Picture 1 (cartoon, helix red, strand yellow):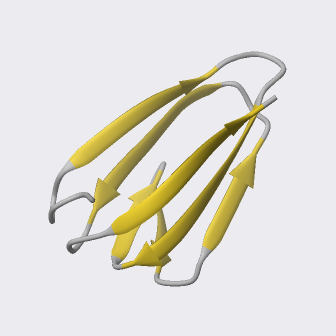
Picture 2 (spheres, rainbow, N blue to C red; picture 1 turned 120 degrees about the vertical axis):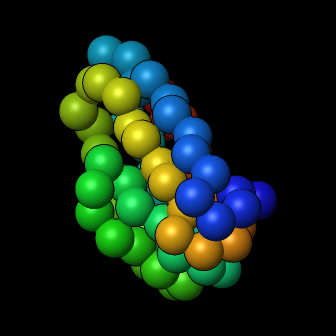
Length: 64
């Protein structure tokens, strides 16, 4: 769980993918607003920056 304005960063390595699912709340993922029920995916390597805009529960999968 992320509290409002709390941040989290994850480095996505080459050859991997990521899926983010928002269970409750709202956050930004690299500046893109997401809210309850939203999901996002990427296969681009680099930093994923998440910042909660309200108390948020989310699951981040780092996939092979």
